[in-house]
Image (cartoon, one colour):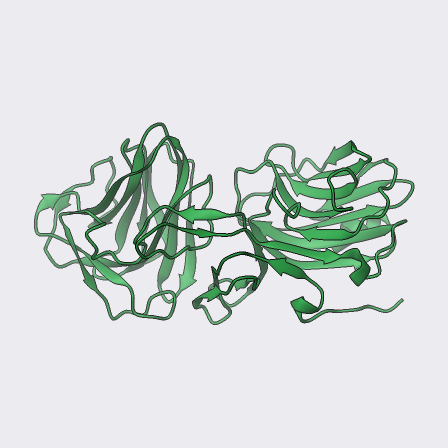
Length: 390
């Protein structure tokens, strides 16, 4: 049997997303994909990450780019429009300029939301200052400093659950912070003269030094997602839903293997689906998903009855992984990153009609990238499963 390769996603994949969505393109520019158009994302060096599949999220900041707007209270800082090229390739960046006073120099948007888990971020670049801080507000319980000249983390404090520093090219970084608030909270962004500690990093400003900022986001969730621009109201990015009918690639109901290379941005999930093959319901399906405690989980559901096995290996956010799953009428097997094959025995679900990529089709989103997926209409050997995922 020959190999069939699809170079145009529309020839094979059914894709929906009921909104536009941003992504970093191969030229290093932050772009917006239109409704129902998938995002093939790249890193700052132009390396392809793959198809981006994310859950629905809402940016709770209503002016994500207009930092001169009165919506953004300012404490011992001023802002000025900059001619610097911003991450989208435009000129919508601002300078965040420290005042000549001994104070905390920051933008402070209080009372955005109540007790919950949140993620916030900013695109920032060094200017005449290199240091900045991203912090939660009211209560002040989470913060991280970043050196924008090097992209390195400085001091941090409070009870931050996680942070990330992503190079998006041309000296710009996407700085994010995730935290759990016990009461009403908000967004704080500081310009700093050095790597200062404590929850109140005041210093005597010179009235002219600044960093560059663009595109702020504050969203409910334990990890940050792609940028959602706003202008006067909150905005929601719909979920990415990608699937392939099994009839499109000669699916063999009796035996087969699926090999996927992917990554997730979700560091806290117990339910990131790499893929699901189903009959249109959850009663009959094959599933490979990630779990942040027990590792990669494979399970088979036949007439509503499930059997499962765990790889024991946990995937960290941002790490690329390879996983291979095989099934036949005698067993099912999975190997993660070349590790020993884990097997289980279950009856084969019949009449599976859809391969869902990065979700169940309605939930449990990967919140990451699928770089490649390969299907073999036979049960590969355990040695082959290991070799293909090394």
